[in-house]
Image (cartoon, rainbow, N blue to C red; front, top):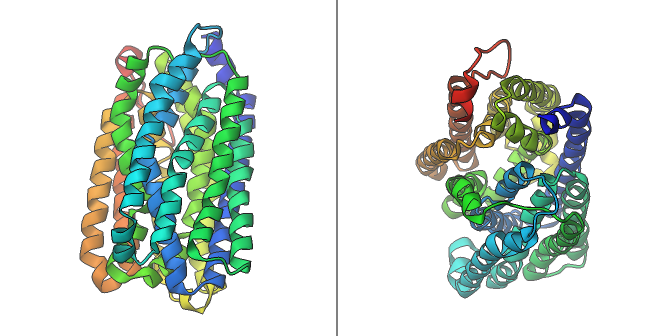
Length: 434
C-alpha cells in the first residue's frame, strides 16, 4: 500500500498532470500549425491527399502497435521492483521484437501496394513508399515512450511526444512546403521526427533500467484483448478522413480535416491527463483501493471539463471566423464545428471511462465498446458521406464517440460504483478486483 500512497499523492498527480497537459498543448499546437501550413500552402486536393496518407499511416501504426504501449505501462507499473534479472531481454525479445516485425511486414505490404493505393486514393505512389519505410519507427516511438511512463517518469513524454515529434514535423514540413518539395519529400519531412523519437526513447529507456515486465505470456494475455480494441480505436480515430477521401474526394477530406482539427486540442488534453493518471489507476484498482480510484476519476473529469468546455463553446461560436484561416475553401464548415463541439462536451463529461475500464483489466469490455463505436461510425458514414460529404462524416464520427463513451460509463458505474460526479455507490472491493 505504500507504493499506492506515493502514487496517489495529490502533489504527484498534479505534477504529472501538468507535464501531461504541457505535452498535449505542445503536440496540439504543433498539429494545428501543421494543418494551417498545409492548407494555406497547397491546393485543397493536394492538402487532402497529404492528410489522407498521414491518417492512413497513423491508423496502420495504431493497429500493428498491438497496444503494447499501454500494456507496458500496466506491466512496468505493477512490477516496479528493480534489479529483476532478464527484464530487459524479455522486453526486447518478448514485446518489442514482435511489434517491430509486424510493423516491418505491414510496411513492406504498403510499399508493394503503392501503385493500387495511388489509384484508389489519389496519393502519389512515392508517398506510400516513404510512409511504408517510416511505419516501424512511428510504431516503436510511441511504444518506447509509453514504457518510460510505466517506470514513473513523464520527462521523455514531455520532451519527445511534446516537443521533438510535433515541432520537428512542423519545422520540416514547413521547410519542404516553402522549398516546393514534391509529395514524397513532404511525407519524409512528416515522418523523420518519429525516427528521432524512437532512437531517443530507446536510449532513455535503457538508462532507466533495470526493470521488469514480468512474465511475457501474462503480458500478452492481458494485452491481447486490448490489442484488438486499440486497433479498432486507431481505425475509429482516423477512418473518417479516409472514407471522405474515398467517397467524396481529397478536397472534401481536406475540408473535413481542417474543420475537425480543433478536436485534437480536447482529445490531447484528455490524453495528457490519462498519461498522468493511468499508472495510478492500475495500482489503485489492483489493490482494491476504490476510494483512490474514485478520487482520480472525478479529479480528472473535473479537469477535463474545466479545460475543454470553454474550448468547445468558443469553437462553436467562433467557427465562422476561425475556419477561413485555413483558406477560402474551408469557410463552409460551420455545421461541422457545431456537431463536433456538442459531441466532445458530452464525451468529456463522461471522464476517462475507457482508461478506468482498461486499468481494471476489463480489456474485453473495452474491445466490445470500440467495436460497437466503429460499426456505428461506418454505417452512418456509408449512408451520409456520399450525399453530405464532410458533414456526413462528422455525424458518423459523433455517433461513434457517443457509443464509445456512454457504454463504458455505464459499465464502470455498475462494476466499481464510480461516477464522474457526485457520490457513487460503494462497490465490493473483492468483486471489483477479482
